[in-house]
Amino acid sequence: MKKIFSYAGYGFVCISALSLAWVAAMAWYNPQAVMDLVHVTLNNTDALSSIRGVYGGVGFSVIAVLIYTMRRNLPLALLFLSLFWLLYALSRLVTIWADGSLGSFGSNWLTIETTFGMIALVLYLGNRKRSQKTVTT
Image (cartoon, rainbow, N blue to C red; front, side, top):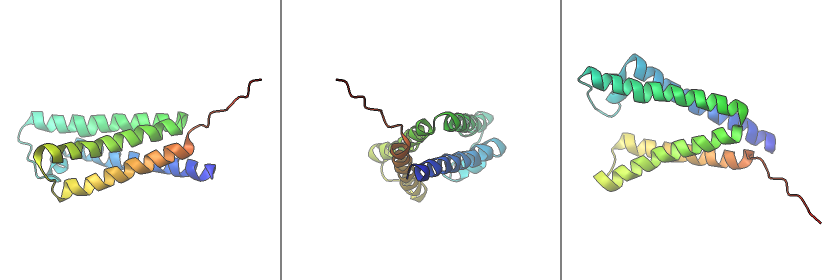
């Protein structure tokens, strides 16, 4: 069972990294394409550079951390992904509470991010190091 959780954990980190890489590459190549998903027009170079930085630069940084951490400590990478995806979902919930209901894009991603966060948490729990109990006499 431990091997199944391990393989699934590595696979999930890779799927997450690839999905982030897709958005990061799109942001660097064509920041407007990223914002077209939410019907926002970028009309100046500061806006373009901000999307390149936030979705591109930060995205590639997260990928680097994920790959490094996955190779060194898979449970830590999964815990990070759980936090990452669930905070994205929480951000959407804050928007609902503060500004009203989401459109179809935001609603779909709320479901995806919550699901990914929960999958990462389950995989973390299945991969975490079991503490060794020592018996003292």
